[in-house]
Image 1 (cartoon, rainbow, N blue to C red):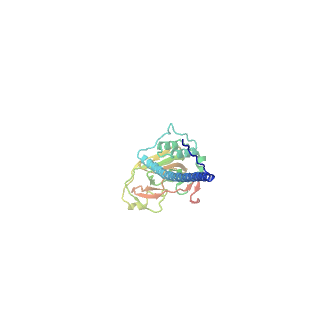
Image 2: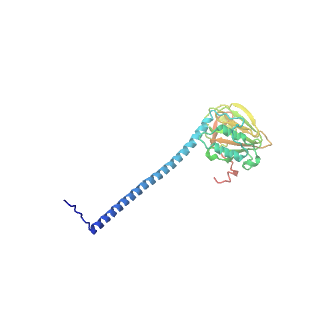
Image 3: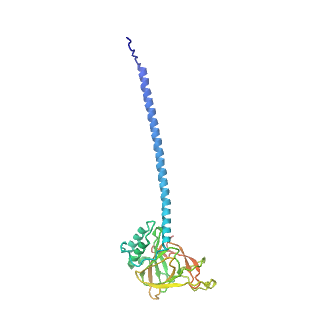
Length: 301
């Protein structure tokens, strides 16, 4: 019978084996830690890159949203004609602040419900104590006073008309124009849109252009055709866009002033004015006499 031989390990051999195992475990642990750090770093970079990409998309999307809204509003001028009465399902507007809040909410979407904007303007009832601080008059011409800039999506302003003051015949730069009477009466005269091309003239003011100036004798004759006229009284709202034609607005009273609330969307800083007899179109910058109740000449831009 054969007996198996049992080999005895020396103390040195056992020690070497234990140290070897420890070294292997340490190496494996370090390797795993390094891999973990590397993976964490990669994931961290991915998170940063994803965040930056999301921010970039957010900026682009914001710009695209504004462009989409402007495009939609301009397209709407081809079919919108205004509404005469407030909507049954629209918000209740009791104060000027309610009106401004409701407008901001309405313009916070790509596709603005232009009927709802009309409803908001119709629903507000004039309270002089609310708008008086924005009403700034000039001795020689009517004034445009900015009330709210609408985050660049609309302009809400108060126009103040001295006795007998009136505007030139003008368009609205392919935008919507809502005009609500707050005090007094205004006469609106509408004209057909002529086919004349715009020309440049320096220092033209929409509130001071004279429809019968001597300069128009140099133009080819293209008389503006009157469509009709109407009187706008307190709390009435008139609506116009370029597809409906041009208009001239004037205070027919020579003893009383008038105040009107205007909403333009999209906002614009240039329009065209037209000579009455020739129909010639002249580019004209539109500016503010005051902003937020402060005289523009005194405020810091």
